[in-house]
Image 1: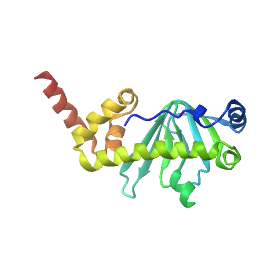
Image 2: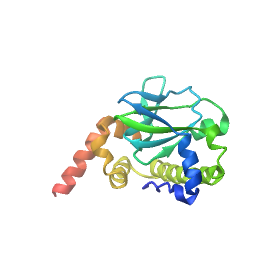
Image 3: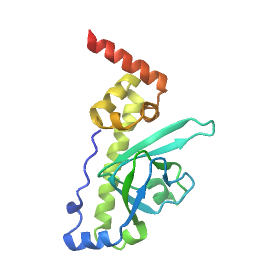
Image 4: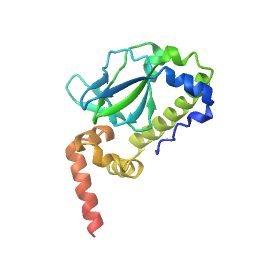
Length: 188
């Protein structure tokens, strides 16, 4: 599930790239600060220059699930909001100090490269979602964790255990048991 890199040069030339950057609004976030909350209408594209964020869903009973992590080099937007006009169904929160570039979608739509860029963003997002959906539907919790470690080796040191568990759809206790089982297997 390695994320395919976004290659801006595939969809724009230098002049258009300069115009694109003229629309950028820099933003820094402290850990625990929200970029947007569930219920907001985030009409923007976000580029992560530095830091780590999470997209989280909190249920009425307080249980929390992590939809996605975003880190250096990622570009994301709320596709559900963009396509339906409905409010965001999840919040995006900084886990580390973050430096972001925000782009208003109305501005991006004026760029000649936007259709190709948008198509590329959709393709990347679809690939990520297809992979995660199959993982959650067909693999055991242990296999999901092992896949997480292989796919995102740097995240384990950056993300607290309970958030890794929330991303994998398991409890922190289950994650602890899986780690112990894997450690015991590696000893023998």
